[in-house]
Length: 498
Image (cartoon, rainbow, N blue to C red; front, side, top):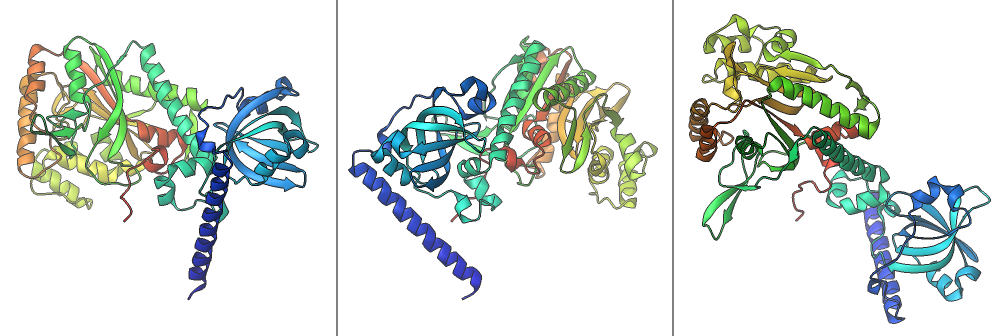
C-alpha cells in the first residue's frame, strides 16, 4: 500500500470519527432539551463590519450579533472564538464567570462551523484586537460536517463548484466576487433606468427557438401536447415590443443553449439585451461603451483594470475597425481584393485557414477573422460590418449590400457584446429566415427557425431600431479578474457524480 493511500485511509478514519463525535454532541443537546434546530429566530443589533469599521462609536456598548464559529482557542477559564457573519469576522472573548459554568461547559464543546448568537460588550484586547466580551451565548445550529480547512483546504475546483455553500464559507474572496456581481447588475439597471429604458420580462419557454444561432434545450408541455424550447435569446420578443410602441426596452435574463462547456461557456447563462427605436448600431456602440465604463467606475472606482495579468484600459474612446480591415491588419490578406466565393476560399487557404467547398465569401471572411484576429484583441475593440450570411437579423449597409450594420465588442480576446441596426424589412427578413431554414434542413442544428409571428409583427411596421446583447457573466469575469465562467456563477452546471 502506497503512502498516499495510507494518508487517504487515515484521513477518512479521522473524518468518520469527527462525524461520529459531532452527532453525539447533537444527541446530547437534544437529550438535555437544548436542540439548537428548534430555535426559529435570533434578534441581532449589529453585524461585525459595523463594529470593526466604527469602533469608537461602539466601544463599551452592548451588541448582539450572530454568525458561524470559524476558530476556537481555549485558555483555561477563558475561550477565544472568531465568529463570521455576512461581511466580516470578529473575535469573541468568553469568560466562565461572565456566562456561567453551565453555558461555558457547552461552549467548550463547540465545534468550528457551529452557528451561534451572542450578546456582549465591545472592547479592545491587550493585543489591540477589537472583540466582544460575551455575556450571553446561544447555539443556533450545529455543524455536523467539518469545514475543509481541517483537511488541507478546499482545493479541488470541481468540489468548490459542486459545494459552493462550503466554498463561500471558507474562501472569503469567493463571496467578494459574487457581491461584486450583484453590484454590477445593479449598476447596469441604474444605467438603463437613468436613460428612460424600461425593464421587461419575456417568455423563457417558446414554441420556436429564435434570435440566435444556437442549439436549444427541448422540453414537452403535457397539457398542450407540444414540444417547447428554452429560450436561446430574448431578441425576437423584445423587438415585438418595439413594434408595439415600447421604444426603449431591456431585459436581464437567463439564456439556455445546449452546447459545449468550457471556461467561457455554461449551458445556462445571463445576458442583457437592449433595444432603442430610432437608433442604429453607432448609437449602440456609444451606449455599450458608456455602459461598461459606467459599471466599472461605479463598482471598481477605476477604468484601469487587470485581467489575468494583462493591463486593460477601459478609458474611451475604444478602437473601432471593420472586420475586413481587422483581417487585413492581423492576417495580412485583403478580402476586398476578391469577389467570388472560390477566390475567397483560396485566399483563406493561403494563410492556413480551412474552409468548406460550400462556404461563401462572407462565411470565409468570418472564419478567417475568428481564427486569425480574435486572439489579438486584448484592449476594448469594436469590430464592425459583418457579412450578411452570418448576420440573419441585422440590416444591410446601404453602401455595401454584402455587409451589415453590425458590431461585436471584444475585450481580452473574447466577445463581450453583439449589436446591430435591426432588420425591419419583413420581406428581407423572410428571405433570410428561409436561408436559415435551408441550412437547418441540411443539418445545421444552430440555424434559425422560421418565426411567422415575428414576421407578422414586422409587417405591422417596426421603426429603425438599434439593438445590443451583452454577456453579463463575461462582464463579471472581466471586472472580477475571474478566469472561468464557473467562478462567477454561484451554481454552474455540473455532471452528476455517480
